[in-house]
Length: 187
Image (cartoon, rainbow, N blue to C red):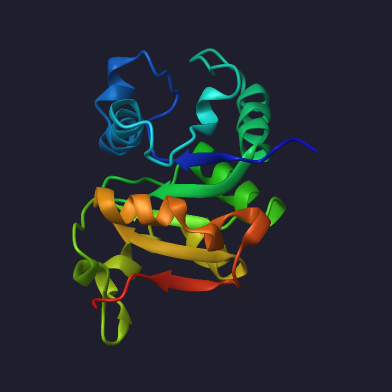
């Protein structure tokens, strides 16, 4: 069994995908993924290990089965799924495959980053997770319908809170907490 220490980041980009294509780099969800990489580049202590850097790149011309195999290879090396879920997210074939395989096959805990929200209070209030956050789940039914099977941590787009989430051992497949929805309280 391989050592599972990476963070697999799932995000929406228009298909077909190519990292070198300006179209992908202009996609907001891809830019948030790149921000995680930039934070790591600027500060080596930022607790992000990019699963996408652990296998061969996928190119525009790749057949679906090749792409799917590569996604699975990366997820097999991962301790969790980091899902970027925003107003721009669309229910693409690749994103559905990533989330389905991560949750239903690998049992990976999920850290959901919401770029449209910056504060803890944007994610939750005294009644729990806010409706505007739950409404985003409808953009990705495979996540909405299966997230109760694994531990999920819902985090606003805030570097300090993302750092805390990535450092949290309860959201690693080897040491995961019980399946439920978690979020940072307002205290």
